[in-house]
Amino acid sequence: MRKIKLNKDKCVSCHTCEIACAEKHSNGGSIEDIYYEYPMPQSRLHIVLRKGKVHLRKCVHCKKPKCIEACPESAIIKQDDGRITIIEEKCTGCWSCIDACPFDALSKCEEKNIVIRCDLCMDLEIPACVSSCHTEALAVEEGEAEA
Image (tube, rainbow, N blue to C red):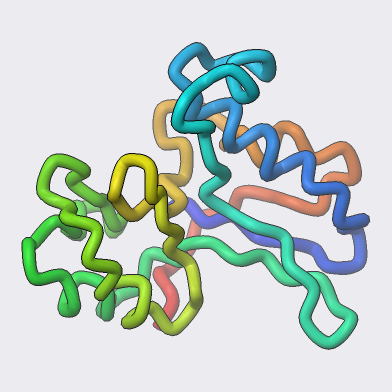
């Protein structure tokens, strides 16, 4: 399964990956659309600092996802290829999955009252975050799901 990995030594915390992710998930698909679209597109991954070190916060597509167990509407499913998918039409915005995720990888989209998470940009050869990273701190690898 596709995984996005962060080389912490190369990351300068510029957040270009977050902007590229939001741009990719905008309705128009361009940087200009981000600022004029409502609700404003959100990034599905985040570069965060913890104890002075850079970390990548995104869905890791767990082997045994706690978010799926926590969802009362069955709005989160695991695909045959291991990806975790949210069915937006079923999501009621109860946020149970957010509380259950041990990786803090899910985000609220309060304007739409749904949960969002990294979808690995499966429709692209290289995920938007990876292709936008000018320091090559992000890379795509094939591997097993976490936890």
